Structures are given as structure tokens and as C-alpha cells.
Length: 447
Image (cartoon, rainbow, N blue to C red):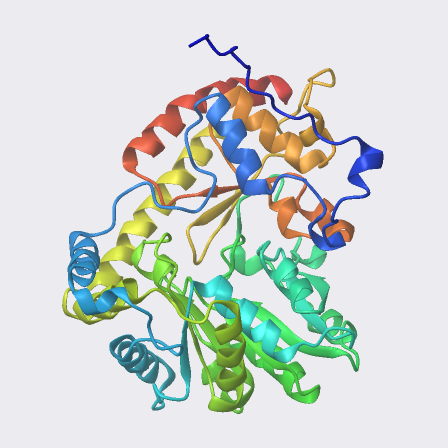
């Protein structure tokens, strides 16, 4: 038999622009090929093997009892099929126990709770249930706002309207020169109310707040609640960091007078137990709000994975017995204080977080050389992205540009900040401290 000719594999060239226009086209909302901030900064960090203080995932393993619960759940054959849409019975019961105690009222697991594929899907389900395409419905976001809120609102047919937190000028506190508290960041209630019109449907509240670390006080929540009541608005309260507060009390707005009937509270096992990859979250509220959100959830994902629901239920039960939350809070407060001490030594001011596991550092005294070269994908994103890119490339410690948490008109409020995560190991902090010594000399030269 004669030998067959060898053929090289052929990779077709991408179609020319004129030919591409004849192909199926994506919707305008998803036509952009711009990298998301997480992928972008992870790639920049990987290029220099930077110390990872950027994205908010834990660099240490979950507690042994948490991992053991997942392993046991997977080993049970009945846990490997579809879960009920609302959620597994035992997890619903455990969430009910936790929130009945927190809220000071009985929470019905059959009507006032829904389990979701992470807190993000819970938020999307509520937006989908209460916004309508083509109706001009609007949602108030307090900036900086977690970057998933805006696309979720747009996907559900709504329009985000932004009201920023600010450090009031009359406070005479200069965050570029001095350490400030997250409690110094204030919401102007008059500005909030002026953003509301007949199309407004929802106010999104995030407390404890990512990335500022602000824990809204009872007085602040009452003022927000009064606005929502005057305009008959739903309050969607993202409280995924409710267990991570430092020497201040976390108050759920749903516990304030007359607020239960208009509030959906969202939580997350990923944040609660340090297992962000499990993607198990929940929504808690009155049945007239949870039922439509559950209907939307049914069409978005139908149900949440079964074995990890069972694992979370087991972990909830065991966490009460082993004082897990108090121990975890103390561990995170120690990590927070360690990272703050590193920046104290370097000489960069920051925002002391009363909650969450993020530290906003003000790097306005760090001057970037005028001839420094930035790649196009950074150049096009503005000063804050260039600041973080320079920091990662030159000092080898990763962070996130908080400008990503702002709308275009307000990005200047974040231009000198870098967000760092302290859900990291002691070894990571040691490495960061060593790497940042170069920055100390640079700041002296810059000043």
C-alpha cells in the first residue's frame, strides 16, 4: 500500500470584519471582550509571581470539620441527585434557626427562606423577580458597589442609579495623609432621596460593606429604611460578611421596625465558612418577597447542588457547638491588624475596616514615573488601574483597583486607592512585608 501524504493541521483564520458581520451577533451587553478585573489582575500578578492579596479567596484551607462535612455528604448516595428547588430540608431548618435567633422572630423554613447557587444568584433572583424589561425600573446602588450588582440589574431589565459613600469635607479628615475609619464614609440621605423617582424599585444595601469595610449603624439603617418606606421600595440587603465585624455590632435592617415586610436579606456559606467555591447562598424574608424570588431561581438554575447543601447544614450545627464564629472573628481581626501594621511601617494610610476582610490603602503619595510604559489593556482603564498595575509589577504584591466598583462619573473617588484582601496566611503577610520594603524607599524619594 502506498504511503498516504502527511497533512498539516490547518487552523482557520478568524473571519474578516466584513465576513464576521454576516455571522450571528451577540447582544450589545455581551459583545465586549474587555477582561474582567479579577482575571486581568490575576494575570498581571502571575506574570511576576506576586504575593496574592488581591482577590478575596482564602489562601488557607477550611477547618477540618467543614471539609469532613463535605466528604461525608458526598459519600451518601442519596445526596447526589437534584435538590428541591427551595433547598434541602435540613439546610432550610438550620438557616431558620440562625435567622430566627438573629432577627428575634420565627422564620418559617417552608415559606421565608430560599437556597441559591451562591449569594450572587440570590441577588440575581431577586432582581429578576422585581424588575421588568422595558419598564424603566431603577435600582439604587451605594458606591463603591460590588461589581456583580450592575450586570445583574441590567440582565434583569433594570437600570442602576449610583449614590456614592463619601468622607464629608466638613470632617476635615484627609485620607491621603492620615488613617481614617470605615465609619467616616457616610451616605448622604438627601442625595439618596434625590436619586429616587417613580421608576425606582429597589435599594441595594451592603453591610458590612465591600470594599470599604463600613458597618452601617442602627441610626444610618433607620434613615435608609425611612426613605424606602416613604417611596415603597424593596430593600435588598447583602450581608454576606455579617459574621466578620471587629468591635462593632452588625445590625440587619430587617430587624428594624416595619422593615421586615420590605427586606430580603442575602447570605453566603462561602463567606461564612471560608469555602467560596461551594457556591451555596440563601435569601431570607417574608413569603411575599421570597416566593417570586424562588420562582426566578427555578428558571435561572432550578436548584442548588445537593451534597454541599447537606454539608452546610451539618457545618451550621457543628459551628454552634465549637464556637466557630467567635474564633474565626478573632483570627480575622489578627490578620487585619497584621496587614495594617505592614502599611503603618511603610507609611501609607488606609481605611480601618470595621467589617469584612478588605483593606483600602491610599497610595496617592506613590508617584508613577511619567515615562512608565503601560500595556493598552491597562492604559484604557484609567489612573486607578495603572496605579495597581504599577504596584504589582514593581513591588510584587497584588491588589484590586476599586475604581471597578464605581460608575464612570464617580471613578475619581477611587483613583488613589488599592484594595487588599487579608483572608490570607501568615506566610503571605511575611512575603508581602518583605516585598514592600522597596516601596518604603521609593516613597521617601517621592516625597
